[in-house]
Image (cartoon, rainbow, N blue to C red; front, top):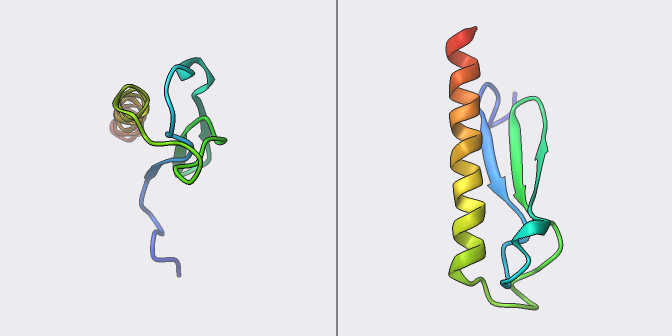
Length: 73
C-alpha cells in the first residue's frame, strides 16, 4: 500500500530561470501531473517569480481539471 494511494498529485520540475516560459510542459499520469520545463535546476539558476508564477498557474489549472473529472465520475 502506497502512501499516496488514492490521492492525486500535482508537482513541479524545472522552474528556475526566466524568459523561457514557452518551454513549460505538462506530463500526466493516471493520478499525477508534473509541470515545468524538466531542465532548469535551482542549482544552476535562481527561481524567478515570472516562471514560478506561470508554473503555479498551470498547476492550479491541473487541479481544477482533476476535480472536474472527479465530479463527472
